[in-house]
Amino acid sequence: MKAAALVIADAEGLDVRVQGEPLLVHAVRGVLDAGCVDHLRIVVPKREVGSYESIVRAVPGTGKQCRVLPCDGSRAESIRLAFESLPGGLDVILICDASRAFVPPPVIRAVADTVSQGAATVIPVLPVTDTVKLVNSHEVIIATEDRARLRTVQAPFGCTPESLHEMCTRGVDPLTEPPETVHTIAGHQNGIRITTPFDVAVVSALLSEEQA
Image 1: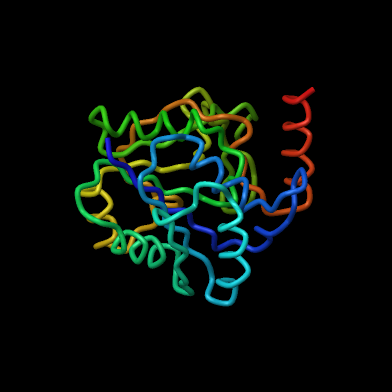
Image 2: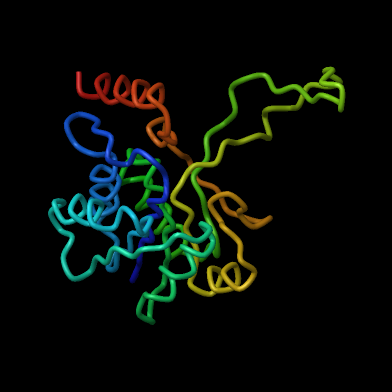
């Protein structure tokens, strides 16, 4: 299996430190520790190229296989540019969200393996545990959704190069608009998206509990 990972680092605050290191370091290390990635592309805002590249290069293992690419377009455009920078002959593409910096490496590896085993697209998910209500245009509850069929979507999104080419042609961001038919695997509680101080506190507590 030959795989590439596109790490989309377009969110604010990826230099925020958790357990002494920036979120971007954790995200890149997690991808490398999955042990299945041959090529790594990290897409960052143009204004952050210098600082983010310094952060990335501090992670052991980011050698010739890794490139930091600037992009100030949409996320779909960032994914397209990163995809076009890859060599041919790949079997699996992983689209990672740097804001989900603590996705465990075994989950990343499982996504890649599932694509390698024949799934055109795959994404990790978690069951919905909250009660979900439907409301009308007046914000009045009209029904209770059956949560047994609901899932929250995480990352990475895994796919074949052919599937990603088709999505790029349509200008689709698979992290926010996955195709209608996507295979799912079990996600992990640590795969939350970290964008606020509250999120940082939550993931720090989860990590501390694991390390206790």
